Image (cartoon, rainbow, N blue to C red):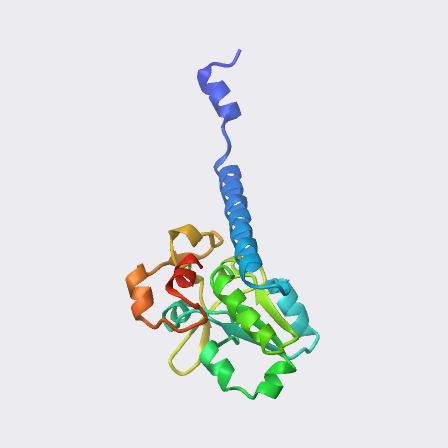
Length: 199
């Protein structure tokens, strides 16, 4: 018969099994938070990293708009994305003919932005899964943008706060305290302090 140690080992999960279960739990939580944010802010379509790639591979005109703060964007961003200020400086006719894809951390701020565009008559506008969920796509990558606009691959992502610290295990995460996030520029699309913090 097995002794206590043997029985305990048989019932215990391996470290790899535990890590897999933890990763799946984090991914599920991130998906739930995105769904909640999306449904609360935007009545249009959502889009995943792989679906964005499909549009790009099909030769579609895609504009990725990062509606986070400049400080968050400096940590990392989705390749070839632009900030909200740059988007509004673009020719409106050209942007309305493109597939405009907004993103933030988990989907709340980007949902507000996407809804704003929809009210302005944009037809091909999407709320992308947040940058946190992009870290789970094996083909997606994040970049750090230098002062000269050069993009370098990086495995680091700003997750805004502990509640949203749900990035893939392969990524280093960072957060700023609430005060510093506000004082670095309360731009973006948040209509109020509450919506900025809920995010």
